[in-house]
Each structure stands twice: as structure tokens, then as C-alpha cells.
Image (cartoon, rainbow, N blue to C red; front, side):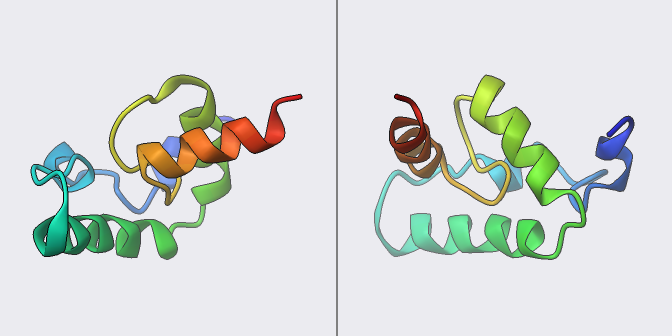
Length: 78
């Protein structure tokens, strides 16, 4: 779908929200939850996830963390 980024719920938000500064613990969990809350209501989450799986190695994108995307890729790659 052309121009799906224009419909993204995160459009205009700072990138900092989607790149947690903490690496573990309750602060990390809260940072991830805040980003995922934006993704949860996004009308183009599936398009974002497709792109994230192919070219976004870090941060939260498509509603998943980088580790979650890595596990998903491993499950779907023969």
C-alpha cells in the first residue's frame, strides 16, 4: 500500500519513544509498553511490521521489539 507511513499512529512522534534507553528491568518494560501502546492502535501496524522484519534491526516497530522480531523471523524462515 502506497503512503502507509502517512497513516501511522507514530507519525510526528519523536523516535525516542521507540528506542528504549534502558536495557532491562521495570524501566525498560515501561518504555516498551509505552511504544507498544502507540502501535496497538495503529491502522497500518501490519505494513509497518512487514517493513520492520526486513529492514529495521533495532527498537520497537510494527508493535514488536527487536528481540520479538528476531524470534518471529527465525520461526518463519525455513
